[in-house]
Length: 317
Image (cartoon, rainbow, N blue to C red; front, side, top):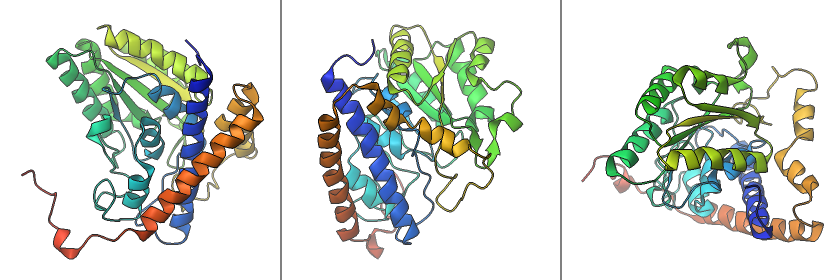
């Protein structure tokens, strides 16, 4: 498949740059004390979300994580409503009650970000069961990290999905750290997609900073799932350039590690690959920058929820 044309290249770069600038502004709000809670930034991992979401249809689903802003932006979520939600404003996706880790939009097939490590995996698996039960050809992308791959929900969900041939693509964003713990310290086998063998399904370990490789591999897994071939695991080796959250300085990193991964920054690799000219890159960045600044202004200017809204939206009516 690969990046098929100029329009796709422009769309992919715009989406990656949009995630980057969105997260940079989130971090600024966090440092200024304007954001309730913690900021789990997606900076450095943009190619995973963008490449994967480019491989699915509008009526498909995605399951996200506590580090989910990138998934939502790549899926087409409104950055104004996202930023407003992160600042706890009434104009946000959850009227300011969900915050950074709980944004969802069912109109885009976004099943919701999840503050519980591994908590989104059974939700996405259930959505896959729903697709099969209803007889549709929809597919679910389930994003989670290397840390979540050691949770029981991972193994139980994939066992079920494999046994019932559910249309789910499990995407491990292996950014090498579960909070502050290096994945090498807690797993014997460091290529996590090899676990697929135990469930009798396909598994792929790829360069998660190469958006084209992510797109090609996820497209293959999606095609299999859509045709009734069951689930796959796609492990994307990538790196989070910030700490676990905004207050984590990352002092546990090995010497030279961050510099190495910054040299393999997904946006940098994309620009160097020559998909777009320098003028095209600059035009995209200028347009996205304006969009992000408008989102920031919208969020800052929006009102906080009123006290009368406190008990609204808690129970199904």
